[in-house]
Length: 278
Image 1 (cartoon, rainbow, N blue to C red):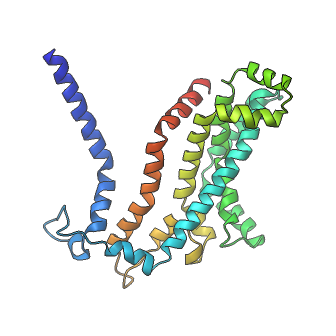
Image 2: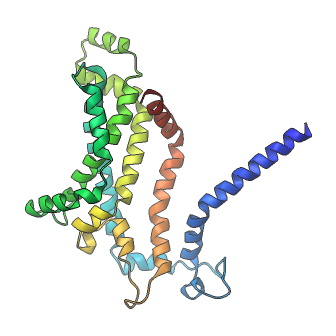
């Protein structure tokens, strides 16, 4: 009995160490964001601030268009995620239910496309965005973000759609529902874990993407959060405002962490379903 309790204590201690090790970079960012500027590089190192200083949080909004950049990121990531899921739902349902010649080959083809890094596409995308006059326009990021995430979304949702019994669709057909009605009123509600998983992961990718946002958004007010943080500057070109960078990092990370914690069960269900059928 004692040995069992000992193993449990050791197990929980090990989990606590792993969690602490994983969260330590973020915790250090939180602590740094609350430190007065003169204590960030003080020697010996002060692991805790002498007092809570919130000036870094106010400066990123007063001196920089950080609020506008957060709104840009929220809008671009939300619309890109919605567009990606809408197209992926139709494509995944078609591959899962219709007997399309080469359907398996189509899935393998789009999986191959997802392996190309975005840096390979930057030159042709830049020429297209420039010729269409979309520089500093939200569409310059929404369309590429939705397209780049489409292969992943189709794979996850196709795997989940295949698990839904065809008898449900046959009953819906008897009731007079069309194919689109079956997808919207039956398949998608039953696929909530896959939808939640895909939506959260696509949103996180869009939220964190840097290369395309840096290339296509050249005005401060048009930039997204990752580029805005990289462009934060101090009083001179030789000063790096680590306190403001930490504050901005905390503000942009907390929403993602909250989403993942709230929907962690859905994420696990969706990824597990995709792994079983894929």
